[in-house]
Length: 107
Image (cartoon, rainbow, N blue to C red; front, side):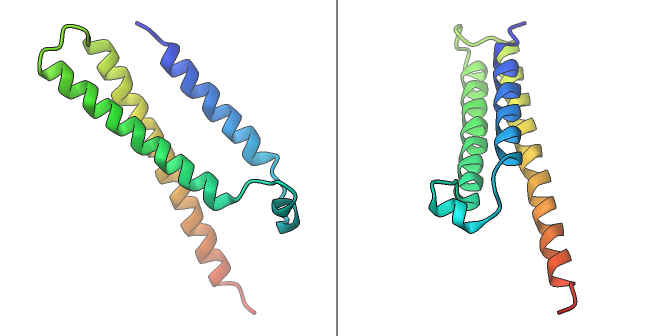
């Protein structure tokens, strides 16, 4: 079984986690060349969508009988898409919880 795709995905997740952990929260850092949180989130959503579309496309090719697509690759891509979606759901859950906590703070 080819695990290069999984290793690549894990590497990307680790680098994203490191980048997110080292970003300054100050808005002045954004003006000095920092990354906007909304842009990072939008990019992550696009990546998840692309992974899901690629997995769906590969599954359709396999079902259609394409001899260049094997079951192992289809299953790995489907699992990668599922993991990236589950990760995005967890991020959304954390954002909703943080928003609710802020809204419940006394002023």
